[in-house]
Image 1 (cartoon, rainbow, N blue to C red):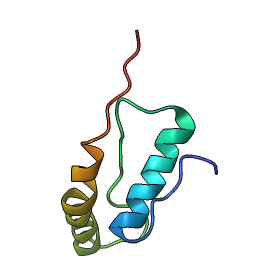
Image 2: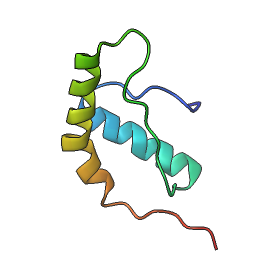
Image 3: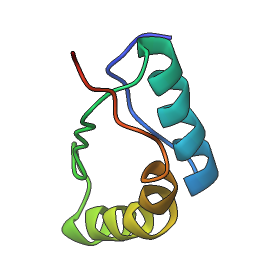
Length: 69
C-alpha cells in the first residue's frame, strides 16, 4: 500500500484505512486531511466532512499520538 492515498468508503472502512496507515508508519502525532478535491461540489464536501467528524474522529481520539523524544 502506498501513501498518500484517498480514503474512500463508509466510516468503518475509512477508519480501518487510517488505522492501517497508522500501523504501517508506526503511528503519527498529526493527521492532515483534505476534505474537498477534484470535481466535488461544496455540498458533497460538506457532507463528507460532517460524516467524518461524527463517525470517524471520535474513534481516532482514542489512539495515542506518537511523540518524539
